[in-house]
Amino acid sequence: MPELADVFRLYGPEYVAKYRDRMLYSHLKVLRDVTRCRTDDLGGQVWFCQNCNEYHYSYHSCKNRHCPKCQNDEATVWLEEQEQLLLPVPYFMATFTLPEELRETARSNQKVMYNLLFRTSAEALQTLAADPKYVGGIMGMIGVLQTWTRDLAYHPHIHYLIPAGGLNEKQSTWLQARNKYLMPAKALSIIFRAKFRDALKEKGLYENIPNTAWKKDWVVQIEPVGTGKAALKYLAPYVFRVAISNRNILALREGNVTFRFRDPDTKKEKRQTFSAEEFTP
Image (cartoon, rainbow, N blue to C red; front, top):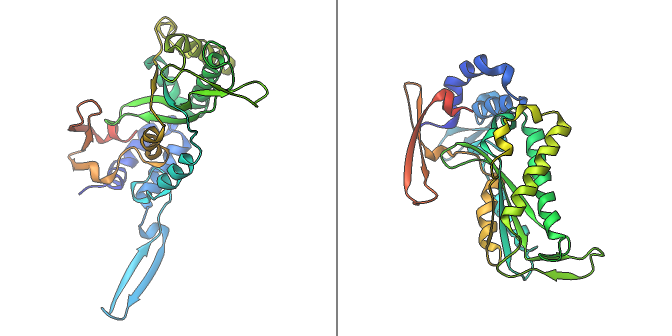
């Protein structure tokens, strides 16, 4: 079966030659690391087995977090640590999605835009949390950024796991929110949009965004998630997991890559085929 390294090895040089001046260093590093992972380029060890009288070669891993071969049990460790921090209160999941009009700028300015996405969404949550109608204090939260969907579409969004309550200004009293209602998503989306707009002006990126972005509703969702344990299990893989695993790459033929994914709505397996150039980003 083909691997991600095969795609990058065969078509990566052509892709880099075409787009190098627009690629981030981190993206170039991923291409280089994945193609060299567990090959003689990175060296390794040679073991001799006296029982079978044969040499065995063990090449070094690249240890790049985007490499399918280097996945490990870090997600499990992270999950166990976060579960220990859960409070005995109901939890909510808040999701902030970056509108389509901002995604081209986000892709070209990832470090800045992802930082703004975290900062402004968290500020929007705390702004409403300070209102006594909802919490009246400061909330704790765990935020996880996702930049792609299961069919590998670029779709930056953040999930926050939030306890139903917070601390007062002196951080000495717990203020319980309603068990089935944290705060209004509509008001939250308006604050989020305004804060992101102001942040873009500070960074000199406002002029890059079409005016339609400021005339539409921004997608913010809030839903109760019980004790929070199931939500953490959903988030944990995305902290460490790569966009696609080797087992989901089904074919590499005539410059096209076919892969499978599970539809989040129907839960059924689907297949998608991209050209190697479309697949590589």
